[in-house]
Length: 300
Image (cartoon, rainbow, N blue to C red; front, top):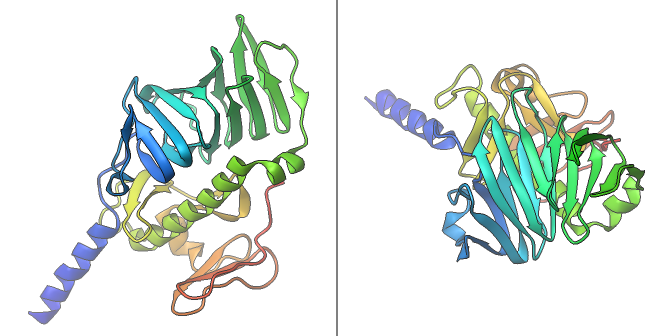
């Protein structure tokens, strides 16, 4: 009887860790400071639950916000910025930057995804995983990493890594990525959030090893310990575009290599010390206590 009760409790805990429910494009995953949907404030208890529907506007005041698009794709808003959800369909996901500044992180882009950002009346199609920044004051797209296509005046302009385009112009220009990364507050916020959602992924991947309870394939899964939706790929391991020190594990890959990876991987334990250590791109992590990490390697 005791074993049976313990088994039920374990199953319940596993289900709580990874809900079968998936997040939809437009779900607001994180808010720092003040943000609204259609003019209504997003309360603390609504984070991870509030959804920006078709035609609605997500807007920040003194604060920042993170919204989920397709699995593995995030759009993050700077202070005093606004973005309208044009289409929340998973095969046709389109948003429009109305004000301020937005950054899009794409850890995974499938060929079936039609992922577009409108800025100044011009559409940018995201073609590959990477980091993309959009500015509304003088409509501009910057590609920190990845590849995009800008469609304007019935002409398609290719943008690769380290290129930017002011909307209305025909020729992309190079920009200094290192300088931009060091001075851009939205970039710093996005990079930090990328690490947090990676940690949420690893927290859940351990529970789904071997097709554990609640695992229904690739998508967004809720992690109550991180109070965040976590991206879970269906197979393999995907690096975050922000750096090789963290990324996104599938449960099968975590089962094989997640506990101890020699390059860009993690060791996770539970106890007082939380820190990183040693050589060849390895990052060691445990939960709680003192924080810090070393190694891991950056995106270049």
